[in-house]
Image (cartoon, rainbow, N blue to C red; front, top):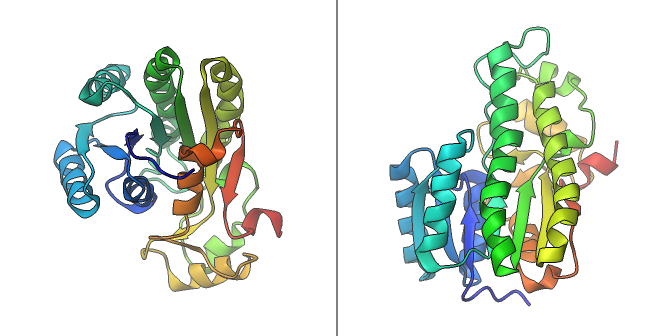
Length: 262
Protein backbone atom coordinates (compact mmCIF):
# COMPACT_ATOMS: atom_id res chain seq x y z
CA UNK A 1 0.00 0.00 0.00
CA UNK A 2 2.87 2.38 0.69
CA UNK A 3 4.94 1.57 -2.40
CA UNK A 4 5.40 4.75 -4.45
CA UNK A 5 7.60 3.40 -7.23
CA UNK A 6 6.68 4.96 -10.57
CA UNK A 7 5.05 8.01 -8.97
CA UNK A 8 6.12 11.62 -9.36
CA UNK A 9 5.72 13.84 -6.31
CA UNK A 10 6.03 17.61 -6.00
CA UNK A 11 6.93 19.04 -2.60
CA UNK A 12 6.99 22.82 -2.62
CA UNK A 13 9.35 24.67 -0.31
CA UNK A 14 11.19 21.44 0.45
CA UNK A 15 14.79 22.61 0.77
CA UNK A 16 14.74 22.13 4.57
CA UNK A 17 12.49 21.53 7.57
CA UNK A 18 9.15 19.76 7.29
CA UNK A 19 9.12 20.02 3.50
CA UNK A 20 12.46 18.24 3.28
CA UNK A 21 11.24 15.54 5.67
CA UNK A 22 8.18 14.89 3.52
CA UNK A 23 10.18 14.84 0.30
CA UNK A 24 12.62 12.36 1.81
CA UNK A 25 9.98 9.91 3.04
CA UNK A 26 8.27 9.90 -0.36
CA UNK A 27 11.62 9.29 -2.04
CA UNK A 28 12.47 6.53 0.45
CA UNK A 29 9.33 4.69 -0.63
CA UNK A 30 10.23 5.02 -4.31
CA UNK A 31 8.67 8.22 -5.65
CA UNK A 32 10.59 10.51 -7.96
CA UNK A 33 10.68 13.99 -6.48
CA UNK A 34 10.35 17.58 -7.64
CA UNK A 35 11.71 20.10 -5.13
CA UNK A 36 10.87 23.79 -5.36
CA UNK A 37 12.35 26.95 -3.93
CA UNK A 38 12.40 30.60 -4.92
CA UNK A 39 16.15 30.11 -5.33
CA UNK A 40 16.88 27.51 -8.02
CA UNK A 41 20.35 26.81 -6.64
CA UNK A 42 18.86 25.64 -3.34
CA UNK A 43 16.23 23.53 -5.12
CA UNK A 44 18.88 21.90 -7.29
CA UNK A 45 21.10 21.15 -4.29
CA UNK A 46 18.27 19.53 -2.35
CA UNK A 47 17.20 17.51 -5.41
CA UNK A 48 20.77 16.29 -5.93
CA UNK A 49 21.06 15.19 -2.30
CA UNK A 50 17.76 13.29 -2.40
CA UNK A 51 18.64 11.65 -5.71
CA UNK A 52 21.96 10.44 -4.33
CA UNK A 53 20.54 9.24 -1.02
CA UNK A 54 17.49 7.33 -2.28
CA UNK A 55 18.42 6.40 -5.87
CA UNK A 56 15.33 8.06 -7.34
CA UNK A 57 15.08 10.78 -9.95
CA UNK A 58 14.86 14.28 -8.53
CA UNK A 59 14.40 17.69 -10.12
CA UNK A 60 14.77 21.18 -8.72
CA UNK A 61 12.47 23.92 -10.01
CA UNK A 62 12.16 27.58 -9.09
CA UNK A 63 8.75 28.68 -7.83
CA UNK A 64 7.25 31.86 -6.42
CA UNK A 65 3.80 30.78 -5.26
CA UNK A 66 2.59 34.39 -5.11
CA UNK A 67 3.10 34.82 -8.88
CA UNK A 68 0.51 33.18 -11.12
CA UNK A 69 2.99 33.35 -14.03
CA UNK A 70 5.64 31.54 -11.99
CA UNK A 71 3.13 28.92 -10.85
CA UNK A 72 1.88 28.20 -14.38
CA UNK A 73 5.42 27.89 -15.76
CA UNK A 74 6.44 25.63 -12.89
CA UNK A 75 3.42 23.32 -13.31
CA UNK A 76 4.08 23.00 -17.04
CA UNK A 77 7.75 22.14 -16.45
CA UNK A 78 6.83 19.65 -13.74
CA UNK A 79 4.33 17.88 -16.01
CA UNK A 80 6.74 17.75 -18.93
CA UNK A 81 9.49 16.18 -16.81
CA UNK A 82 8.00 12.67 -16.85
CA UNK A 83 4.55 13.18 -18.34
CA UNK A 84 2.56 12.84 -15.12
CA UNK A 85 2.22 14.31 -11.63
CA UNK A 86 0.83 11.94 -9.04
CA UNK A 87 1.40 13.69 -5.70
CA UNK A 88 1.42 17.35 -4.72
CA UNK A 89 2.47 18.51 -1.25
CA UNK A 90 1.71 22.22 -0.85
CA UNK A 91 4.30 23.07 1.77
CA UNK A 92 5.37 26.60 0.80
CA UNK A 93 4.52 29.04 3.55
CA UNK A 94 5.86 31.16 6.36
CA UNK A 95 6.37 34.85 5.67
CA UNK A 96 5.99 36.34 9.16
CA UNK A 97 7.93 39.41 8.09
CA UNK A 98 9.95 41.81 10.19
CA UNK A 99 7.13 43.43 12.15
CA UNK A 100 5.78 42.32 15.52
CA UNK A 101 3.25 39.50 15.67
CA UNK A 102 0.62 41.33 17.74
CA UNK A 103 -2.15 42.57 15.47
CA UNK A 104 -1.94 46.17 16.68
CA UNK A 105 1.80 46.31 16.06
CA UNK A 106 1.80 44.32 12.82
CA UNK A 107 2.68 46.00 9.51
CA UNK A 108 -0.04 45.86 6.87
CA UNK A 109 2.45 44.68 4.25
CA UNK A 110 3.36 41.67 6.40
CA UNK A 111 -0.31 40.74 6.80
CA UNK A 112 -0.76 40.97 3.04
CA UNK A 113 2.35 38.86 2.39
CA UNK A 114 1.32 36.25 4.94
CA UNK A 115 -2.04 35.66 3.25
CA UNK A 116 -0.47 35.65 -0.21
CA UNK A 117 2.25 33.13 0.58
CA UNK A 118 0.24 30.74 2.72
CA UNK A 119 -3.27 30.84 1.28
CA UNK A 120 -3.34 32.46 -2.16
CA UNK A 121 -0.17 30.62 -3.16
CA UNK A 122 -1.68 27.29 -2.13
CA UNK A 123 -4.77 28.01 -4.23
CA UNK A 124 -2.62 28.97 -7.23
CA UNK A 125 -0.62 25.72 -7.07
CA UNK A 126 -3.76 23.60 -6.54
CA UNK A 127 -5.29 25.21 -9.62
CA UNK A 128 -2.26 24.78 -11.89
CA UNK A 129 -1.22 21.28 -10.85
CA UNK A 130 -4.76 20.10 -10.18
CA UNK A 131 -5.67 20.75 -13.82
CA UNK A 132 -3.12 18.14 -14.91
CA UNK A 133 -4.36 15.68 -12.30
CA UNK A 134 -7.91 16.21 -13.53
CA UNK A 135 -6.87 15.31 -17.07
CA UNK A 136 -5.02 12.17 -15.99
CA UNK A 137 -7.89 11.12 -13.66
CA UNK A 138 -5.61 10.56 -10.69
CA UNK A 139 -3.77 12.48 -8.01
CA UNK A 140 -3.09 13.03 -4.33
CA UNK A 141 -3.03 16.65 -3.13
CA UNK A 142 -1.77 17.29 0.40
CA UNK A 143 -2.09 20.85 1.68
CA UNK A 144 -0.17 21.93 4.75
CA UNK A 145 -2.32 23.74 7.29
CA UNK A 146 -1.53 24.28 10.95
CA UNK A 147 -3.16 23.86 14.32
CA UNK A 148 -3.19 27.68 14.24
CA UNK A 149 -6.13 27.29 11.87
CA UNK A 150 -8.20 25.28 14.35
CA UNK A 151 -7.38 26.51 17.86
CA UNK A 152 -6.75 29.90 19.44
CA UNK A 153 -3.28 30.22 20.99
CA UNK A 154 -2.43 31.23 24.54
CA UNK A 155 0.07 34.05 24.01
CA UNK A 156 1.36 33.88 27.60
CA UNK A 157 3.92 31.21 26.70
CA UNK A 158 5.31 33.56 24.05
CA UNK A 159 5.57 36.46 26.48
CA UNK A 160 7.17 34.33 29.20
CA UNK A 161 9.78 33.05 26.75
CA UNK A 162 10.39 36.51 25.25
CA UNK A 163 9.39 35.23 21.81
CA UNK A 164 7.48 37.06 19.09
CA UNK A 165 3.92 35.81 19.16
CA UNK A 166 2.11 34.05 16.35
CA UNK A 167 0.32 36.58 14.09
CA UNK A 168 -3.45 36.25 13.74
CA UNK A 169 -3.05 36.55 9.97
CA UNK A 170 -1.12 33.26 10.03
CA UNK A 171 -4.09 31.63 11.74
CA UNK A 172 -6.42 33.18 9.16
CA UNK A 173 -4.32 31.89 6.26
CA UNK A 174 -4.02 28.37 7.63
CA UNK A 175 -7.71 28.25 8.50
CA UNK A 176 -8.32 29.15 4.88
CA UNK A 177 -6.08 26.30 3.72
CA UNK A 178 -8.10 23.84 5.82
CA UNK A 179 -11.40 25.14 4.38
CA UNK A 180 -9.92 25.09 0.86
CA UNK A 181 -9.00 21.44 1.35
CA UNK A 182 -12.54 20.40 2.28
CA UNK A 183 -14.18 22.12 -0.67
CA UNK A 184 -11.49 21.25 -3.19
CA UNK A 185 -11.88 17.60 -2.17
CA UNK A 186 -15.51 17.84 -3.28
CA UNK A 187 -14.51 19.49 -6.56
CA UNK A 188 -11.80 16.98 -7.39
CA UNK A 189 -13.50 13.75 -6.27
CA UNK A 190 -15.25 13.12 -9.64
CA UNK A 191 -11.81 13.23 -11.30
CA UNK A 192 -10.22 10.60 -9.06
CA UNK A 193 -8.14 13.12 -7.09
CA UNK A 194 -7.91 12.96 -3.30
CA UNK A 195 -7.37 16.24 -1.44
CA UNK A 196 -6.35 16.23 2.21
CA UNK A 197 -4.59 18.46 4.71
CA UNK A 198 -1.92 17.96 7.35
CA UNK A 199 -1.97 20.44 10.22
CA UNK A 200 1.28 20.28 12.18
CA UNK A 201 1.64 21.60 15.67
CA UNK A 202 4.82 23.26 16.86
CA UNK A 203 8.02 21.62 15.63
CA UNK A 204 11.39 22.29 17.23
CA UNK A 205 13.79 23.14 14.42
CA UNK A 206 16.51 24.17 16.87
CA UNK A 207 15.88 27.91 16.66
CA UNK A 208 13.37 28.30 19.50
CA UNK A 209 14.13 29.69 22.98
CA UNK A 210 14.53 26.76 25.41
CA UNK A 211 11.90 28.25 27.72
CA UNK A 212 9.35 28.33 24.90
CA UNK A 213 10.09 24.68 24.07
CA UNK A 214 9.58 23.79 27.74
CA UNK A 215 6.31 25.71 28.06
CA UNK A 216 4.92 24.38 24.77
CA UNK A 217 5.91 20.80 25.59
CA UNK A 218 4.16 21.09 28.95
CA UNK A 219 0.92 22.00 27.13
CA UNK A 220 1.23 19.01 24.76
CA UNK A 221 -0.34 15.65 25.62
CA UNK A 222 2.68 13.64 24.47
CA UNK A 223 5.03 15.96 26.34
CA UNK A 224 7.24 17.25 23.54
CA UNK A 225 7.22 19.40 20.42
CA UNK A 226 7.29 17.81 16.99
CA UNK A 227 10.66 16.38 15.98
CA UNK A 228 12.28 17.28 12.69
CA UNK A 229 13.43 14.16 10.88
CA UNK A 230 10.60 11.91 12.02
CA UNK A 231 7.21 13.09 13.25
CA UNK A 232 5.69 14.46 10.01
CA UNK A 233 6.81 11.62 7.75
CA UNK A 234 4.18 8.98 8.48
CA UNK A 235 1.26 11.32 7.86
CA UNK A 236 2.71 12.46 4.53
CA UNK A 237 3.39 8.90 3.38
CA UNK A 238 -0.11 7.77 4.33
CA UNK A 239 -1.88 10.55 2.45
CA UNK A 240 0.39 10.23 -0.60
CA UNK A 241 0.02 6.46 -0.94
CA UNK A 242 -2.65 3.93 -1.86
CA UNK A 243 -3.27 3.43 1.87
CA UNK A 244 -5.42 6.58 1.79
CA UNK A 245 -7.38 5.86 -1.38
CA UNK A 246 -10.70 6.10 0.50
CA UNK A 247 -9.71 9.22 2.43
CA UNK A 248 -10.46 12.70 1.13
CA UNK A 249 -11.36 16.08 2.60
CA UNK A 250 -9.77 15.45 6.01
CA UNK A 251 -7.50 17.60 8.16
CA UNK A 252 -4.99 15.34 9.90
CA UNK A 253 -3.49 17.03 12.95
CA UNK A 254 0.10 16.06 13.76
CA UNK A 255 0.57 17.90 17.02
CA UNK A 256 1.16 15.42 19.83
CA UNK A 257 -2.35 16.10 21.12
CA UNK A 258 -1.78 19.85 21.65
CA UNK A 259 -5.04 20.96 20.01
CA UNK A 260 -7.20 18.41 21.82
CA UNK A 261 -5.72 18.78 25.32
CA UNK A 262 -6.37 22.38 26.29
